[in-house]
Amino acid sequence: MGQIFHPSTNTISRLSLYGAVFIAAIVAYAAYRVNQSPYITEVNVAVQQPVPFSHKHHVTELGIDCRYCHSTVETSAFAGIPPTHTCMTCHSQIWRSADMLEPVRASYRTDQSLAWTRVNSVPDFVYFDHSIHVKKGVGCTTCHGPIGEMPLTWRAETLYMRWCLDCHRAPERYIRRREDVFKADYKPPSNQLELGRKLVVEYNIKPVKLLEDCYTCHR
Image (cartoon, rainbow, N blue to C red; front, side, top):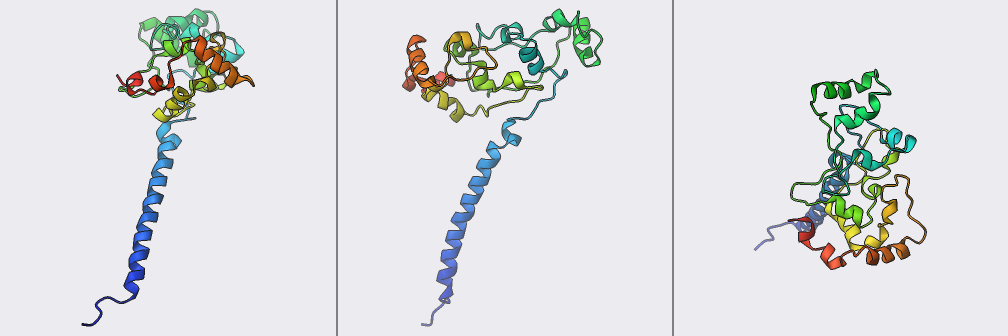
């Protein structure tokens, strides 16, 4: 019986298999890169707001403490968005006629809250509590990035689970003294690991095994 397939068929078959694997790898890598891109994560993308609020101006230039606006950050899961009367505490006296602040004045007159857009948020199936992180020495800039340098607010981190786990698996690399938690210009000291290991014990931070437990964040 004569040969059905030409000898080159073997070569073509091998090239097809190798090519399929190569293409699959390229597609997987492309999907990974897209998933990490600002288009998906919104990292470093300034979010449009009803009023162009500048953390750089209010926090760094004026020295306003984070807790003045985010008043529940130490006591509840949600850090809190300031009500309009908090803004008007100052702006009833200064910049009273600024055009950009008309939405704030209108909100105050009508008693209708401003529709601020959330910049940092996690999915509904993720439980996150600001207060416990603050008590354990996790600083604002650890998650929110250089917030004191932002003229408009953007997301600094992906907030993906693997990013959270990096801290849960090695909290000593990130935690700081409680008195430094709200410092927008905080820089980790040269002895961060030594300090972190000490604070892990002092602040009674759970063992890594418990911090990695699914129930810690998914309840």
